[in-house]
Length: 70
Image (tube, rainbow, N blue to C red; front, side, top):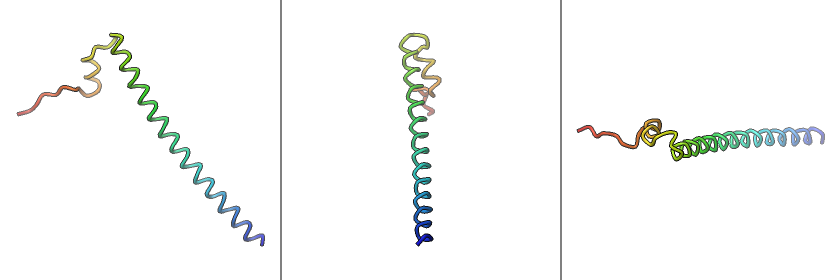
């Protein structure tokens, strides 16, 4: 009886650890996404305030305008 109970407890703890890990990964991913979003909002705000010109902002982002090679 005790052996069965110990197995059940061990299995439950293993699943709890797995859930903790998946939740931790999910939260880290969410924080990274929100960090990127805040960074983009800050860039847009600075551009609107005139601190950075639109051209400088586009240059940092990789440029919206690219010349075609013919």
